Image 1 (spheres, rainbow, N blue to C red):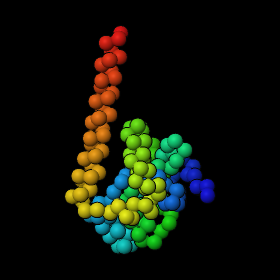
Image 2 (image 1 turned 90 degrees about the vertical axis):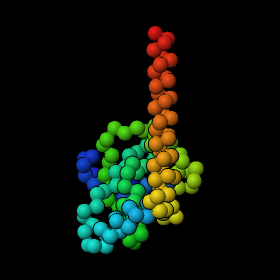
Image 3 (image 1 turned 60 degrees about the vertical axis):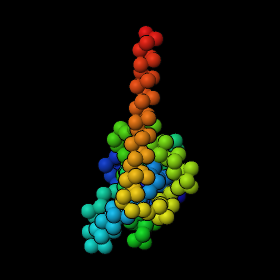
Length: 151
């Protein structure tokens, strides 16, 4: 199925949650409850579209995993998305996507089984990402130092 592309980066469009590759391993139950409450209160327009980026031929969610799972749990198979226009650390995103694939998380519905307490989320997800980003920074710094020594 081909997505309906927006005219510009700012335009949102509907996209199947079965075709979005997550870049996050877990969903915080607390955050999910807040989004579900917003949807059930009849104010779904207050929920931002999910930003996606085509990385290595796949449509990857760069944020909004909780919002996407909330829509899915509310009975929707499609969600509003928009093209990610920020220049993010794509190397880090590739690592996160690989983590997801290693745990058989290949679409938003796979995250339904990954809802955990916010306390566990902070340890299992935030800490893991922070450690990975520190390691990437260390590698970049060492690479810069060794490159400067050669000159």
